[in-house]
Amino acid sequence: MPARSIWRGRLTVLAGLVILGLNLRAAVTTVPPLLDRIQAEVQLSPAAVSLIAAAPPLMFAIFGSLAPFLGRRWGLERVIAGAMAVGALGMGLRALTSSEFIFLVGTGAAMAGLGGANVAVPPLIKRYFPDRIGLMTTASTLFLVAGQALPPAIAVPLADQVGWRWAAGIWAVGAALAALPWFVQPYRLSRRQRGKKTARPRLGPIKVTTSYVFWGITGLLICNSAAAYALIGWLPRIMTDAGASAHRGAVWLTIFTAGSLLPAMVVPALTIRLRRPWLLIVTMYLSWTVGLVGLWLWPLHGTAWWIALTRIGDGNYACAITLMNLRTRTSQTVLTVSGLAQAIAYTVAAAATFAFGQLQAFSGSWHWPFILLICTMPLGLAGGLLASRQTYVEDQVARTPSQP
Image 1 (cartoon, rainbow, N blue to C red):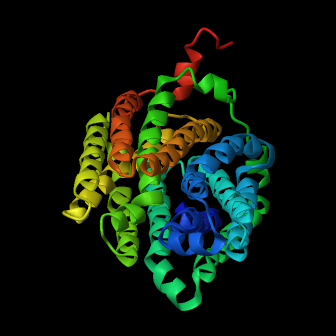
Image 2 (cartoon, rainbow, N blue to C red):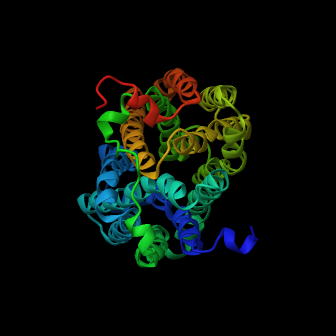
Image 3 (cartoon, rainbow, N blue to C red):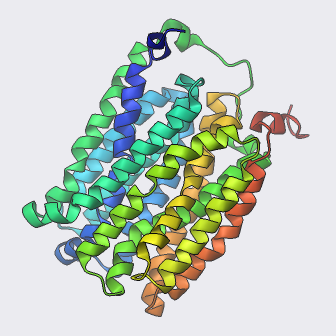
Protein backbone atom coordinates (compact mmCIF):
# COMPACT_ATOMS: atom_id res chain seq x y z
CA MET A 1 0.00 0.00 0.00
CA PRO A 2 1.48 3.38 -0.92
CA ALA A 3 2.50 5.47 2.07
CA ARG A 4 0.30 8.29 0.86
CA SER A 5 -2.86 6.18 1.18
CA ILE A 6 -2.22 5.26 4.83
CA TRP A 7 -3.29 8.73 6.01
CA ARG A 8 -5.70 9.60 3.19
CA GLY A 9 -8.97 10.89 4.63
CA ARG A 10 -7.53 10.94 8.14
CA LEU A 11 -5.31 14.01 8.15
CA THR A 12 -7.93 16.23 9.80
CA VAL A 13 -8.37 13.66 12.56
CA LEU A 14 -4.61 13.34 12.96
CA ALA A 15 -4.20 17.11 13.28
CA GLY A 16 -7.16 17.25 15.64
CA LEU A 17 -5.69 14.58 17.92
CA VAL A 18 -2.35 16.41 18.04
CA ILE A 19 -3.87 19.77 19.00
CA LEU A 20 -6.30 18.08 21.37
CA GLY A 21 -3.53 16.21 23.16
CA LEU A 22 -1.57 19.41 23.66
CA ASN A 23 -4.56 21.02 25.41
CA LEU A 24 -6.19 18.20 27.38
CA ARG A 25 -4.20 18.86 30.57
CA ALA A 26 -3.13 22.51 30.31
CA ALA A 27 -5.91 23.70 32.63
CA VAL A 28 -4.89 21.07 35.18
CA THR A 29 -1.19 21.87 35.54
CA THR A 30 -1.32 25.67 35.16
CA VAL A 31 -2.78 26.45 38.58
CA PRO A 32 -0.63 24.47 41.10
CA PRO A 33 2.58 26.51 40.57
CA LEU A 34 0.54 29.73 40.83
CA LEU A 35 -1.62 28.65 43.74
CA ASP A 36 0.00 30.90 46.36
CA ARG A 37 -0.51 34.02 44.19
CA ILE A 38 -4.06 33.05 43.28
CA GLN A 39 -4.92 32.24 46.89
CA ALA A 40 -3.66 35.61 48.06
CA GLU A 41 -5.54 37.65 45.45
CA VAL A 42 -8.78 35.66 45.16
CA GLN A 43 -8.87 34.86 48.88
CA LEU A 44 -9.30 31.13 48.45
CA SER A 45 -10.11 29.20 51.61
CA PRO A 46 -8.21 25.98 52.48
CA ALA A 47 -11.32 23.96 51.53
CA ALA A 48 -11.47 25.75 48.16
CA VAL A 49 -7.81 24.94 47.53
CA SER A 50 -8.51 21.25 48.20
CA LEU A 51 -11.51 21.43 45.86
CA ILE A 52 -9.38 22.95 43.11
CA ALA A 53 -6.86 20.12 43.49
CA ALA A 54 -9.66 17.54 43.36
CA ALA A 55 -11.59 19.26 40.55
CA PRO A 56 -9.73 17.69 37.58
CA PRO A 57 -10.48 14.04 38.40
CA LEU A 58 -13.92 14.88 39.81
CA MET A 59 -15.14 16.74 36.74
CA PHE A 60 -13.40 14.24 34.47
CA ALA A 61 -15.48 11.56 36.18
CA ILE A 62 -18.82 13.36 36.00
CA PHE A 63 -18.62 14.68 32.47
CA GLY A 64 -16.54 11.80 31.17
CA SER A 65 -19.42 9.50 32.15
CA LEU A 66 -21.78 11.60 30.00
CA ALA A 67 -19.53 11.45 26.93
CA PRO A 68 -20.69 7.97 25.77
CA PHE A 69 -24.35 9.03 25.79
CA LEU A 70 -23.62 12.34 24.08
CA GLY A 71 -21.28 10.62 21.63
CA ARG A 72 -23.95 8.16 20.53
CA ARG A 73 -26.46 10.97 20.18
CA TRP A 74 -24.35 13.69 18.51
CA GLY A 75 -21.17 11.93 17.42
CA LEU A 76 -17.74 11.85 19.02
CA GLU A 77 -16.47 14.72 16.89
CA ARG A 78 -19.19 17.16 17.94
CA VAL A 79 -18.81 16.15 21.58
CA ILE A 80 -15.10 16.99 21.49
CA ALA A 81 -15.75 20.31 19.73
CA GLY A 82 -18.34 21.37 22.28
CA ALA A 83 -16.34 20.07 25.24
CA MET A 84 -13.19 21.98 24.30
CA ALA A 85 -15.24 25.15 23.72
CA VAL A 86 -16.65 24.82 27.25
CA GLY A 87 -13.14 24.21 28.56
CA ALA A 88 -11.88 27.38 26.89
CA LEU A 89 -14.68 29.42 28.44
CA GLY A 90 -13.95 28.00 31.88
CA MET A 91 -10.24 28.79 31.68
CA GLY A 92 -10.98 32.32 30.54
CA LEU A 93 -13.55 32.85 33.29
CA ARG A 94 -11.29 31.87 36.17
CA ALA A 95 -8.49 34.08 34.85
CA LEU A 96 -10.77 37.14 34.92
CA THR A 97 -12.50 36.85 38.29
CA SER A 98 -11.62 37.94 41.82
CA SER A 99 -14.47 35.91 43.36
CA GLU A 100 -13.76 32.55 44.99
CA PHE A 101 -17.12 31.20 43.83
CA ILE A 102 -16.63 32.28 40.21
CA PHE A 103 -13.09 30.92 40.24
CA LEU A 104 -14.43 27.54 41.36
CA VAL A 105 -17.16 27.68 38.70
CA GLY A 106 -14.61 28.49 36.01
CA THR A 107 -12.35 25.68 37.19
CA GLY A 108 -15.29 23.28 37.16
CA ALA A 109 -16.28 24.32 33.63
CA ALA A 110 -12.71 23.97 32.37
CA MET A 111 -12.35 20.49 33.85
CA ALA A 112 -15.81 19.46 32.66
CA GLY A 113 -14.92 20.29 29.08
CA LEU A 114 -11.56 18.54 29.21
CA GLY A 115 -13.14 15.52 30.89
CA GLY A 116 -15.72 15.08 28.14
CA ALA A 117 -13.06 15.30 25.44
CA ASN A 118 -10.67 13.03 27.31
CA VAL A 119 -12.99 10.02 27.22
CA ALA A 120 -13.53 10.31 23.46
CA VAL A 121 -9.86 9.82 22.49
CA PRO A 122 -9.62 5.97 22.72
CA PRO A 123 -12.76 5.33 20.61
CA LEU A 124 -11.59 7.90 18.04
CA ILE A 125 -8.35 5.97 17.66
CA LYS A 126 -10.31 2.73 17.30
CA ARG A 127 -12.62 4.26 14.70
CA TYR A 128 -10.16 6.11 12.49
CA PHE A 129 -6.91 4.20 13.08
CA PRO A 130 -7.76 0.51 13.72
CA ASP A 131 -4.60 -0.40 11.79
CA ARG A 132 -2.38 1.95 13.82
CA ILE A 133 -3.65 1.57 17.41
CA GLY A 134 -0.18 1.38 19.00
CA LEU A 135 1.23 4.26 16.98
CA MET A 136 -1.73 6.58 17.54
CA THR A 137 -2.05 5.73 21.24
CA THR A 138 1.66 6.55 21.60
CA ALA A 139 1.30 9.79 19.64
CA SER A 140 -1.80 11.01 21.48
CA THR A 141 -0.24 10.19 24.87
CA LEU A 142 3.00 11.94 23.95
CA PHE A 143 1.22 15.13 22.98
CA LEU A 144 -0.93 14.91 26.11
CA VAL A 145 2.20 14.65 28.28
CA ALA A 146 3.87 17.51 26.40
CA GLY A 147 0.80 19.70 26.87
CA GLN A 148 0.72 18.73 30.53
CA ALA A 149 4.38 19.61 31.12
CA LEU A 150 4.56 22.97 29.33
CA PRO A 151 2.27 25.11 31.57
CA PRO A 152 4.14 24.57 34.87
CA ALA A 153 7.44 25.11 33.05
CA ILE A 154 6.52 28.65 32.05
CA ALA A 155 3.79 29.55 34.57
CA VAL A 156 5.98 31.17 37.23
CA PRO A 157 8.28 33.13 34.85
CA LEU A 158 5.27 34.26 32.82
CA ALA A 159 3.38 35.30 35.96
CA ASP A 160 6.44 37.28 37.09
CA GLN A 161 6.29 39.24 33.83
CA VAL A 162 2.57 39.70 33.13
CA GLY A 163 0.74 38.46 36.24
CA TRP A 164 -0.91 35.16 37.11
CA ARG A 165 -4.12 35.98 35.20
CA TRP A 166 -2.37 36.01 31.84
CA ALA A 167 -0.25 33.01 32.82
CA ALA A 168 -3.38 31.00 33.64
CA GLY A 169 -5.74 32.39 31.01
CA ILE A 170 -3.58 32.16 27.88
CA TRP A 171 -4.31 28.43 27.64
CA ALA A 172 -7.95 29.19 26.85
CA VAL A 173 -6.75 30.13 23.34
CA GLY A 174 -5.23 26.68 22.86
CA ALA A 175 -8.41 24.97 24.02
CA ALA A 176 -10.46 27.02 21.57
CA LEU A 177 -8.09 26.07 18.73
CA ALA A 178 -8.36 22.41 19.75
CA ALA A 179 -12.12 22.56 19.15
CA LEU A 180 -11.88 23.76 15.55
CA PRO A 181 -10.89 20.53 13.72
CA TRP A 182 -13.76 18.70 15.36
CA PHE A 183 -16.30 21.22 14.11
CA VAL A 184 -14.99 20.51 10.61
CA GLN A 185 -14.57 16.74 10.74
CA PRO A 186 -18.27 15.68 10.98
CA TYR A 187 -18.91 17.30 7.61
CA ARG A 188 -15.99 15.46 6.03
CA LEU A 189 -17.43 12.05 6.79
CA SER A 190 -18.55 10.21 3.72
CA ARG A 191 -22.09 8.91 3.27
CA ARG A 192 -20.75 5.40 3.69
CA GLN A 193 -19.17 6.30 7.04
CA ARG A 194 -22.32 8.03 8.23
CA GLY A 195 -24.48 5.04 7.45
CA LYS A 196 -22.06 2.40 8.69
CA LYS A 197 -23.62 0.20 11.35
CA THR A 198 -21.99 -2.36 13.55
CA ALA A 199 -23.20 -5.92 13.24
CA ARG A 200 -22.77 -6.44 16.97
CA PRO A 201 -25.28 -5.28 19.57
CA ARG A 202 -24.34 -2.06 21.31
CA LEU A 203 -23.19 -2.67 24.88
CA GLY A 204 -24.40 -0.33 27.58
CA PRO A 205 -22.63 0.52 30.86
CA ILE A 206 -24.48 -2.14 32.87
CA LYS A 207 -23.51 -4.93 30.49
CA VAL A 208 -19.81 -4.08 30.37
CA THR A 209 -19.62 -4.29 34.17
CA THR A 210 -20.09 -8.07 33.84
CA SER A 211 -16.62 -8.26 32.23
CA TYR A 212 -13.64 -8.79 34.52
CA VAL A 213 -11.41 -7.26 31.82
CA PHE A 214 -13.40 -4.03 32.18
CA TRP A 215 -12.79 -4.07 35.94
CA GLY A 216 -9.12 -4.83 35.39
CA ILE A 217 -8.72 -1.77 33.17
CA THR A 218 -10.67 0.28 35.70
CA GLY A 219 -8.40 -0.87 38.52
CA LEU A 220 -5.34 0.14 36.52
CA LEU A 221 -6.77 3.61 35.97
CA ILE A 222 -7.96 4.07 39.57
CA CYS A 223 -4.55 3.64 41.17
CA ASN A 224 -2.62 5.49 38.50
CA SER A 225 -5.04 8.43 38.44
CA ALA A 226 -5.25 8.72 42.23
CA ALA A 227 -1.48 8.92 42.63
CA ALA A 228 -0.88 11.10 39.56
CA TYR A 229 -3.52 13.74 40.32
CA ALA A 230 -2.64 13.89 44.02
CA LEU A 231 0.96 14.72 43.10
CA ILE A 232 0.00 17.10 40.28
CA GLY A 233 -2.18 19.00 42.73
CA TRP A 234 0.18 18.99 45.70
CA LEU A 235 3.79 18.36 44.58
CA PRO A 236 4.78 22.06 44.57
CA ARG A 237 3.38 22.42 48.11
CA ILE A 238 5.13 19.21 49.23
CA MET A 239 8.44 20.56 47.98
CA THR A 240 8.03 24.04 49.51
CA ASP A 241 6.95 22.53 52.85
CA ALA A 242 10.18 20.51 52.77
CA GLY A 243 12.18 23.72 52.31
CA ALA A 244 12.35 24.23 48.54
CA SER A 245 11.55 27.55 46.86
CA ALA A 246 8.32 28.09 44.90
CA HIS A 247 10.34 28.18 41.67
CA ARG A 248 12.00 24.87 42.50
CA GLY A 249 8.62 23.35 43.32
CA ALA A 250 7.31 24.42 39.90
CA VAL A 251 10.41 22.95 38.24
CA TRP A 252 9.86 19.59 39.91
CA LEU A 253 6.23 19.61 38.81
CA THR A 254 7.40 20.25 35.25
CA ILE A 255 9.85 17.35 35.49
CA PHE A 256 7.12 15.19 37.01
CA THR A 257 4.69 15.87 34.16
CA ALA A 258 7.29 15.77 31.39
CA GLY A 259 8.77 12.56 32.74
CA SER A 260 5.84 10.58 31.34
CA LEU A 261 7.17 11.08 27.81
CA LEU A 262 9.44 8.03 27.82
CA PRO A 263 6.86 5.48 29.03
CA ALA A 264 4.32 7.05 26.67
CA MET A 265 6.68 6.25 23.78
CA VAL A 266 7.34 2.62 24.66
CA VAL A 267 4.43 1.26 26.74
CA PRO A 268 1.72 1.08 24.02
CA ALA A 269 4.03 -0.86 21.69
CA LEU A 270 5.12 -3.20 24.51
CA THR A 271 1.51 -3.76 25.55
CA ILE A 272 0.61 -4.78 21.99
CA ARG A 273 3.66 -7.03 21.53
CA LEU A 274 3.41 -8.85 24.84
CA ARG A 275 0.91 -11.70 24.85
CA ARG A 276 -0.01 -10.99 28.46
CA PRO A 277 1.59 -7.75 29.73
CA TRP A 278 1.21 -8.52 33.43
CA LEU A 279 4.97 -8.39 34.09
CA LEU A 280 5.14 -4.92 32.56
CA ILE A 281 2.23 -3.76 34.73
CA VAL A 282 3.75 -5.22 37.91
CA THR A 283 7.06 -3.48 37.17
CA MET A 284 5.32 -0.14 36.69
CA TYR A 285 3.33 -0.39 39.92
CA LEU A 286 6.39 -1.37 41.92
CA SER A 287 8.06 1.73 40.48
CA TRP A 288 5.09 3.85 41.56
CA THR A 289 5.29 2.46 45.10
CA VAL A 290 9.03 2.97 45.56
CA GLY A 291 8.81 6.48 44.07
CA LEU A 292 6.01 7.47 46.44
CA VAL A 293 7.93 6.16 49.45
CA GLY A 294 10.96 8.20 48.39
CA LEU A 295 9.00 11.43 47.93
CA TRP A 296 7.34 10.84 51.29
CA LEU A 297 10.47 10.18 53.35
CA TRP A 298 13.20 12.08 51.44
CA PRO A 299 11.53 14.72 49.25
CA LEU A 300 14.68 16.86 48.84
CA HIS A 301 17.19 13.99 48.65
CA GLY A 302 17.24 11.87 45.53
CA THR A 303 14.19 13.75 44.24
CA ALA A 304 15.04 13.09 40.60
CA TRP A 305 15.22 9.34 41.24
CA TRP A 306 11.90 9.23 43.09
CA ILE A 307 10.16 11.23 40.36
CA ALA A 308 11.75 9.05 37.66
CA LEU A 309 10.34 5.93 39.34
CA THR A 310 6.85 7.45 39.54
CA ARG A 311 7.08 8.33 35.84
CA ILE A 312 7.90 4.73 34.96
CA GLY A 313 4.84 3.77 36.97
CA ASP A 314 2.70 6.32 35.13
CA GLY A 315 3.11 4.19 32.02
CA ASN A 316 0.10 2.28 33.34
CA TYR A 317 -2.11 5.05 31.95
CA ALA A 318 -0.90 4.41 28.40
CA CYS A 319 -1.17 0.67 29.06
CA ALA A 320 -4.81 1.00 30.16
CA ILE A 321 -5.74 3.16 27.14
CA THR A 322 -4.08 0.64 24.82
CA LEU A 323 -5.88 -2.27 26.47
CA MET A 324 -9.22 -0.51 25.97
CA ASN A 325 -8.67 -0.90 22.23
CA LEU A 326 -7.04 -4.33 22.36
CA ARG A 327 -9.73 -5.92 24.53
CA THR A 328 -12.75 -4.61 22.58
CA ARG A 329 -14.04 -5.29 19.08
CA THR A 330 -15.82 -2.03 18.15
CA SER A 331 -15.39 1.71 18.70
CA GLN A 332 -18.81 1.82 20.38
CA THR A 333 -17.63 -0.64 23.03
CA VAL A 334 -14.42 1.33 23.48
CA LEU A 335 -16.52 4.46 24.08
CA THR A 336 -18.61 2.69 26.72
CA VAL A 337 -15.58 1.14 28.43
CA SER A 338 -13.62 4.39 28.27
CA GLY A 339 -16.48 6.49 29.62
CA LEU A 340 -17.39 4.20 32.52
CA ALA A 341 -13.86 3.12 33.47
CA GLN A 342 -12.55 6.68 33.48
CA ALA A 343 -15.63 7.93 35.34
CA ILE A 344 -15.07 5.40 38.12
CA ALA A 345 -11.31 5.95 38.17
CA TYR A 346 -11.54 9.73 38.25
CA THR A 347 -14.21 9.66 40.96
CA VAL A 348 -11.88 7.69 43.20
CA ALA A 349 -8.95 9.90 42.15
CA ALA A 350 -10.92 13.03 43.05
CA ALA A 351 -11.71 11.64 46.49
CA ALA A 352 -8.07 10.62 46.96
CA THR A 353 -6.76 14.03 45.85
CA PHE A 354 -9.16 15.87 48.15
CA ALA A 355 -8.36 13.51 51.03
CA PHE A 356 -4.64 13.93 50.33
CA GLY A 357 -4.89 17.67 50.97
CA GLN A 358 -7.30 17.41 53.89
CA LEU A 359 -5.23 14.78 55.69
CA GLN A 360 -2.26 17.12 55.47
CA ALA A 361 -4.33 20.02 56.78
CA PHE A 362 -5.64 18.00 59.71
CA SER A 363 -2.39 16.21 60.61
CA GLY A 364 0.07 18.97 59.75
CA SER A 365 2.33 16.57 57.85
CA TRP A 366 2.44 14.59 54.60
CA HIS A 367 2.80 11.18 56.28
CA TRP A 368 -0.82 10.05 56.22
CA PRO A 369 -1.50 11.39 52.71
CA PHE A 370 1.37 9.32 51.28
CA ILE A 371 0.32 6.24 53.23
CA LEU A 372 -3.13 6.60 51.66
CA LEU A 373 -1.70 6.55 48.13
CA ILE A 374 0.69 3.69 48.81
CA CYS A 375 -2.16 1.57 50.13
CA THR A 376 -4.02 1.85 46.80
CA MET A 377 -1.21 0.23 44.78
CA PRO A 378 -2.28 -3.43 45.32
CA LEU A 379 -5.61 -2.65 43.63
CA GLY A 380 -3.74 -1.61 40.50
CA LEU A 381 -1.71 -4.81 40.52
CA ALA A 382 -4.88 -6.90 40.77
CA GLY A 383 -6.47 -4.90 37.95
CA GLY A 384 -3.41 -5.40 35.77
CA LEU A 385 -3.59 -9.16 36.15
CA LEU A 386 -7.25 -9.20 35.10
CA ALA A 387 -6.77 -6.83 32.15
CA SER A 388 -3.85 -8.90 30.88
CA ARG A 389 -6.08 -11.85 30.03
CA GLN A 390 -6.39 -12.32 26.27
CA THR A 391 -10.12 -11.98 25.69
CA TYR A 392 -12.66 -9.39 24.55
CA VAL A 393 -15.20 -7.49 26.64
CA GLU A 394 -17.95 -8.35 24.13
CA ASP A 395 -17.18 -12.07 24.37
CA GLN A 396 -17.30 -12.03 28.17
CA VAL A 397 -20.60 -10.18 28.16
CA ALA A 398 -22.02 -12.67 25.63
CA ARG A 399 -21.23 -15.55 27.98
CA THR A 400 -23.15 -14.09 30.94
CA PRO A 401 -26.62 -15.54 31.65
CA SER A 402 -28.22 -12.09 31.47
CA GLN A 403 -27.20 -11.62 27.85
CA PRO A 404 -30.22 -12.15 25.53
